[in-house]
Length: 161
Image (cartoon, rainbow, N blue to C red; front, side, top):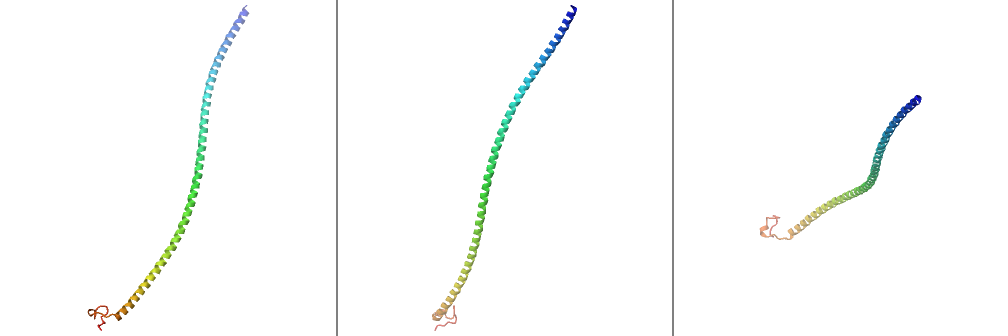
């Protein structure tokens, strides 16, 4: 009986040891399950954050693309406007040059006409003086001076005749 009791006691000790091992393993399993649940929650939070950041990045990328398109479009419009203005400026420069040439021609014509007018005025003055001299000579020949003019005035040599 003693061998049986001894075997029973040995088996009882083994059972207690195994139960203790099972309890430890259950506790470890519970701890690992809690850790797994915590890690799962953390993973879900990180997944949500990642999804939010991905959405935010997509929105920013889309916004940047739209802004770039606007900038590119605006640059194209501005470049076209600039080209148009440059063309207009070139045209105005040509017009200005043509007008300056025309002004120079007209100035030359005006100076020529003024010179012609001066010559004509001089000729007219000369002709008027010549005419006045002719008329004066004729008047002096035909005119009978009054007594008070004799010996004085324009022609002191004239005498009453």
